[in-house]
Image: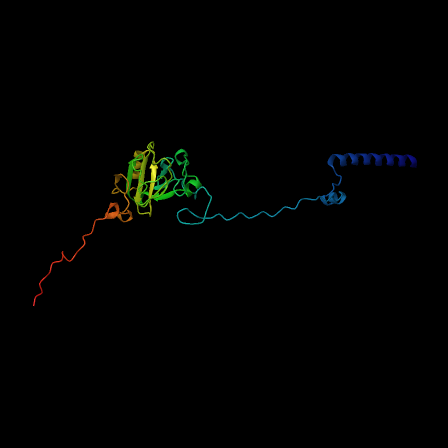
Length: 258
């Protein structure tokens, strides 16, 4: 009887264990590993990462405007409006703000008539005489090669009438189809130049601030009288006038008053 009791007890214990195992599997009674246990069980891995450079601070933006500050700025809001040309030919350019560029002024250019270089280029501005339309007192003009006197007109350079002529190699030729112009005003030497379309040039000057009392005068300014060499009266006389020799016979005796 004792053996049967022990066998039955062992069978009960086995069934109890199997039932408990089923419950444990069903309700997941197994102990889960914590995060600390996982970190302790995993091997330590060292990964080399590049050292990040500290970010550079942005440059301070210049708070400036074209009219109130001299600080340069490249922002779209502070850039000055682009100046536009109202009239332009190979010899001269007239801008909408009243600025006049007389091209090929300081250096002689024999190909000036055949080169259409715009005033926007830096090398054109460096070799141009800059004049404001408001400073012009008078505008002289004459067609073609009317004047061939070097004291009044030249291909390039200064004349005796205080006019500095911009480059135009065919200015004194009979085949010159352009108009010769002198801008006479309050800016030192007067500017002499050639113009392709004199009507459009004159209208553009009147639109950009040419004084209303500044007339358009036909011809060219004459040199001052003090600079013109005047010949003496006797320069052209080839033979000398014979002198009258006075003798004792020609003398008249005057009475002596007592």
